[in-house]
Image (tube, rainbow, N blue to C red; front, side, top):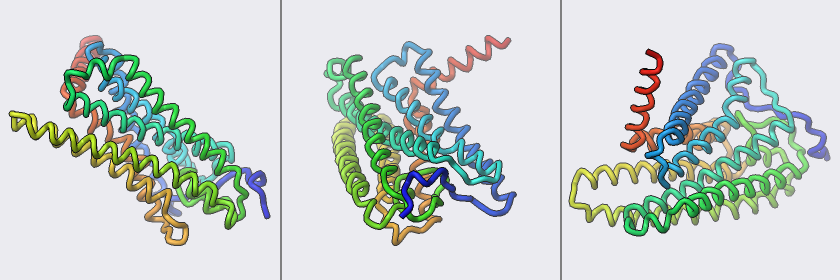
Length: 311
């Protein structure tokens, strides 16, 4: 039985055999990556430079932008390089690093989304207590807890996954290294320990999702009492978009990580992976930030300043 130590590299999914289609995939992934870099980079620059945005909500948005950049930078550059240079290989160490950082950023992002739901709940349902409940120290503690929980979770699963013996070759049916795809290469019963750890983690994720839903239900109830119809409409649309992103993130992630290998379809796995690994980092800046008046005003001021400096 071959051991994991005998594997020196992995073969990632080849998007197509024809060179034209490979270049099309390269262009598509590059466009998504550049859009994510632009949107999240703009948020980072704006929040850091404008002291009017040094509030708990914008502090969490800054952390979300950092996690978005980290998440998409873990997977897309390698996939675009492989499509451009017509190669599939990734080193064993590179695969380990991808699993570690991807699980880290995904886990920390989901924890941060839970914290942001709490922030919105306090802001709308308990506005008089907002300053005391979400002071600078409390915000820093919650953000650190989100990053720390993501890192500990990533180290646990990375160590668990790559301690398994691999008996099914080294071909990964995805454009990046992912735990379920590595488990498919392991021996028959060796992967059950990691599956148990995944089920435990996803149970905690589901509890966070329940907390997010309950928070937004309380927010909806408070919004219904608003006298302004325009204010109610804006609050509803924003909260529903937040819930839609979190739901898409959760449902596709659970499907990818709990889908039995016996009913796995490569095309479906690819679509699901794109939905939870590439789409959120690209659209989060639009949903969480560009609908925010303060962010839009600060971005406008930033561009005006840059334009005047160039004159």
